[in-house]
Length: 222
Ligand SMILES: Nc1ncnc2c1ncn2[C@@H]1O[C@H](COP(=O)(O)OP(=O)(O)O)[C@@H](O)[C@H]1O
Ligand SMILES: [Mg+2]
Image (cartoon, rainbow, N blue to C red; front, side, top):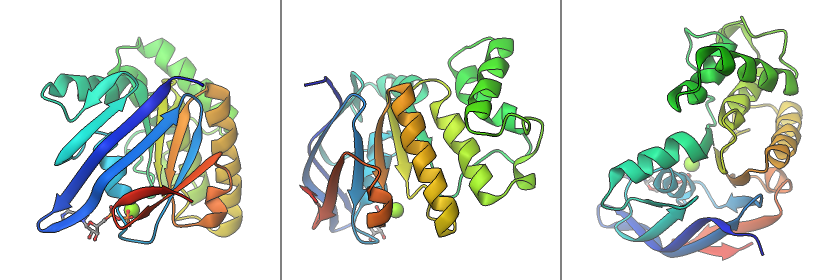
């Protein structure tokens, strides 16, 4: 049994009077790939935002890669976010005025990697994703599928322990989505990261080892 990269213990979260998560529990082991299913509005993005420290739980504990998220010491969450976490968004969120190498290099520069090394590692990551010739391009010059590959490169380049992906193929056509999913599964496996992917698609969930569903605020096996 590998050590847990993520432990969610009795976490509850509400917006106003409405409880989105109620006593939710989830454990993810090192290198495990988990799909989180659930209808639109079920609370998938809310859970990912809690793990990323972008929101705070009302009750419960989140332990991620050895850090307590949402605890009294906000430095802990910030360090975790910078060093141990990669995030792939549905809408890619590339920085429009930076070229592809500069986009991928952002997480490395944030953890203090020297500029030359950051460039070289970003170029190598783009090559692994079939975009080695495109380093000087701007995001808007790429197709949706290519932009998602850059987003994946950026999420993995600093070798995070945990990658969160929120509907990562929601903006891609089915064929492109398929390729992006295969590539994500392969690259996550190669870097040894654990993956937590929120999706409403059974098809996307097929790349995972383990599947859960959010039902009435609880996380249940699916
Ligand atoms: N900042 C917020 N304030 C109030 N309600 C929110 C906020 N964020 C999300 N919600 C509500 O919480 C519920 C869960 O949202 P979300 O986590 O985005 O669901 P999913 O990602 O599964 O589609 C939705 O009903 C949504 O409208
Ligand atoms: Mg969502």
